Length: 452
Picture 1 (cartoon, rainbow, N blue to C red):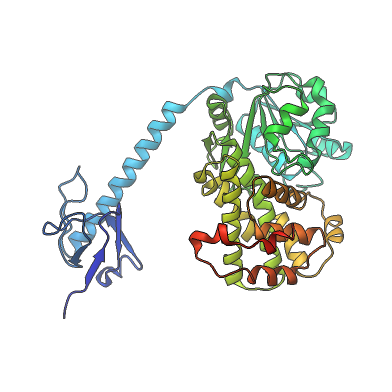
Picture 2: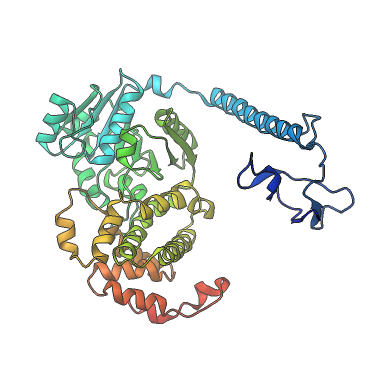
């Protein structure tokens, strides 16, 4: 029987192929480092037999892939060596980047007592028992619940908070002596709220923003709202974003997020303050990319929910989210964001979580809209803010400002404004011209833009 030939590209770091003889050990696909055929130049596509014995695959080992059990044993050794190398690198990097940020931090303020503000307060408090975490709330009953029984009766009635979490309605008491301030107030209310407490904010106090969205009238992001509302253009600022549900953070499930700041030292400090055994924190200097992705993904989540509510199927869901990701990238890059940010954890990662998981507030709004419910009834029945509803209008204004065509996100804004039904939106989107992907941006006709 002829041995099957495999046609592999020469420019890949890893080559992937299927070998039936390994099915008892590797049931699906087998990935090994690039293999060379001595008779063929590396610039061409290489063809070789599945049973060909390759040369050594690691510089630090003289092992070759032999046939039978020895080949399996050697392959396992390769995997083990690669893993041990990764672990050594990780330990070395942690040692080099270790700082005393947590040790030097004695007090943290959290503005807002919603689900994510509460989850972050609990997380920070759990990092250091001696750390004082002050939550500034507006509801005296929730304050009393947190201080007396250590529960947020409104958002997390079944999750006990650390005893070093203290709630207050007094801005001066919450902010006095704070080393960091976490801002968890909804975007649309942030400016007026910050102006009311500005007198109690130290000009050097770092603000870590948990809020995602755009201010409807001004189109401002939180990196612009906070310094302007506090009348301090140099107020230290960090944006915290990424795929994260408050309930899973409260349950200490593995989570990864991004802190973004133009100040590299401040980003590193926030990373060291937040990172734990179940929360992985990466740093970025692309504040615009992180904030825009975090804001626009909420609008796209409403669209994904509408598709679900209308029972349009998985094909349409995948197509819509893919188109929405492109629209977010188009606008974000026009605003100066890095494409890698949009395709990374705080972009695509957050989009995937928000669009595909039922815990998403914005997706829930979309599901109910797609099922035929009225928006006012939906919002009045929710005890949390769905930022995508307010952000949708701001997105369209930004699209006009930067001359970017965004049919999916535009449709969401029109549906929210009750100027377009979900059914009509589907017909409009499916009626867009059939074009090549390379020219899609240029050739989306102005017909749909008349809906703006």
